[in-house]
Length: 113
Length: 112
Image 1 (cartoon, rainbow over the protein chains, first blue to last red):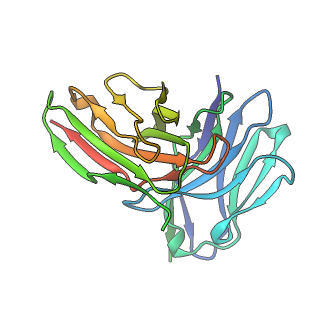
Image 2 (cartoon, one colour; image 1 turned 60 degrees about the vertical axis):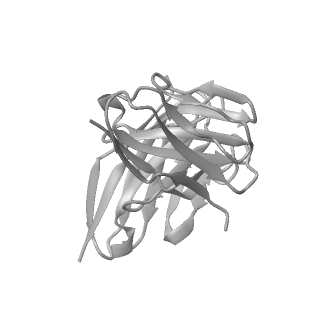
């Protein structure tokens, strides 16, 4: 079955530290992959997406993710965390039938001074 | 401004009282979808629509209905809500399946 696994439901970092949010997917073929961010009381906003081509994808707010087929991973990183990055982050993949997004359970990022 | 709107944003109701959550997009998108978000489960698709009068079930369609009479609107109907439908609901739209999905602000529903 197609699935998306996010390791760690809660991640806490210091301001200025590296942010690493992990995402693994199950698939026999490379999928379309997405990272969304959800700020409190808001809808989801697209951070970045991978479809084909370059495996290192740059997104908004300084985030980037690298598609690694051999590891079936699509981890999200940011070199230096900011207080405003505190939010919930969702990794998602397009289903094989292309009719929906399959989401991971989400990772809540806390940034402390 | 390009956006997806949902109404109401918050709703508390009682078991069995029919309700409708509206969703509207102003981007002329063909594809629209409803998701519910529950803690620890992420978002799960309820129904989706590929165009006017074309709808299909997602992963968790039981207890829900949808309609797509106009391209811009995609209401979610709960004919007889039950407490297990207490959740946060999101409507989303996109130009096509593999394009970015734009999400509405969410509707928090509580069924007592």
